[in-house]
Length: 260
Image (tube, rainbow, N blue to C red):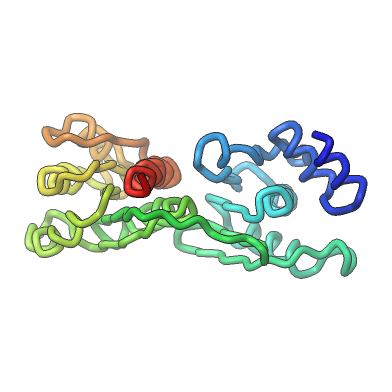
């Protein structure tokens, strides 16, 4: 505690970082940012943009970079991304301006910000993120970005839906090399069951809200995963962050085992 107070007094850290060190979170007008989540859970805190104004998203993103060196924003639109870019390129004055790299992926609706001094984590583990079709790529991409931010090497395998089994069978060996597999599939969601029957790695089914009619909007895909005759786990519909985070935690355990 004394070291933190002395650093604050010396101007080496700001109030937000001092608060995050002492309380585990930093308070902003937009809410409290959980700066200790990665240390506590191994998962970086994510800022959900939905339900927040662009100004609130930008404020939380700035606090995230100040306290942890980076920020991960999910479900962001173009206005959210623009507000974040502005926060890191046009501060009120030169002394307050933060320097960071901002990466907005429109398809996955994510914004990733790395401060200039941030060193991304690196794990000796691979996560395969498999998407049934192009329509499933956005949710699969969110999972991939989260797993990558945790430190895993990510291998994307796209457009291998079960409408033509040859498409998944000719990627079987590649997928089998991964330490954990996330399978994003909409409609009936059969791909996760097929993949779980082909590889010996843990498989996480990520139902996607593609499809229509009875069982549409991801309902059939989720129910199929829950009823799967292959051994797998399932997350909620379109829950790319959760699937990516779970895969990242498994990757962390694999990395720790290999280091031992």
